[in-house]
Image (cartoon, rainbow, N blue to C red; front, side, top):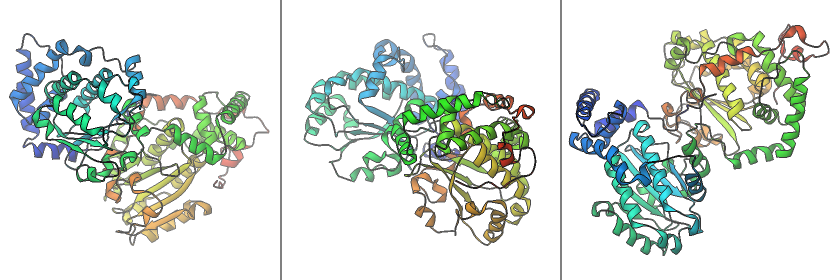
Length: 566
């Protein structure tokens, strides 16, 4: 499995907005990059060791000034000689950086502000100032800048420093020269621009801190420093809440999750607190899980018709998904390998880089939201359906769905799912082309092979077409699942009686960010090879013991039987 899901998701609209604000366009940028590339080749003291995307980012960061980009490219290579402690030997797994990360949380927020600035947060400072060694944080900051050079597309930065735990010891240990060198790297080597530096939860210690700031920063930057007292909401006059962690009054998510996402680059990040919450709700714990996994592993080895081709984390997820029922996990493991015979169109040959998958992505957006609901459910959204129903080939989306479930069986840790389907563009053509048997087959895979549990299915922007949709739902889904289907009329806010806005994309009235930031991001966490490798592992029905009747439940050898819902 390869984790390539990006932490930063820059939409085409955001790129266009940034370029418009700077008075540039695609053609101008191409011309500038070509010219700067030629200039770089002519500099005997500089290596031609940057790609075009980095030059473009520097051109954007420099407000499209060719002269500033040249200065920046020179500084990018040259300052390594002057400030090696920040710009060289940056081993993110090194002991100094790992120690530093344990005592302060630094994060770059995944969402841009409305005016296209990137927000950075420093918080959870260790109260013991002896644990704060400032130099490694400068190195961490330069690593972040390096990553943003190839991943980000913004006009500049907003920095927020939480002073809640800062005391006199931290101030005394602060090094003015480190701050000055950081400013030099930030402005010159990376050509970043600071819109504002905000000190939140500022108390009496702020006077001393501000003296250091004024001594270290340029006069121009000093004017961009703002102080916010404990309990104040003045920060939100400068930065919207969905760009801030929960602990600072925002709605973007808990600090631990955001810090972990930023550190690992992973799209789905489960915090220890979320894992503990899920286990508590199910009445289980670490020891119980280890015992169950060991027992289930032994059971699996004794099944002559099933391959022993899953790791312990998958068995644990299935145990959690099955509400800690050993019998249901055994059914799930059997179905996981056996249903590939019955539903190869959903569970085999899932080449996510193939042309059919690429076609499907263009005509409907499917997404798994990165944040769990407050009660630990995972939200899935289907939106932006192509109005031309001939472009929507439903079986492809069934295969994409099982791909997503495959990934979540090793990456997710939740109590179940909430599905949201946007009916805004759905018309009679889509209804006619819908396949009831496909819906039923997906339900079998979802409940049995992946052991997922659906808390609610919400049909939003539901209009006249909803009656036809509901008929299909009632024909395709089990009676218990039908009771978990809810319809929400256009303009209604009733969805938020069930799902918090920060788990819903902007286009559906939420605050999580644009849909393009999330569409198919979970799919990017793996490659085709990882999925196609799973085709090798399926049941050998000729070896199934005569007393094993799991196949009778989900119909591998014959008739289809309706499953009950947990």
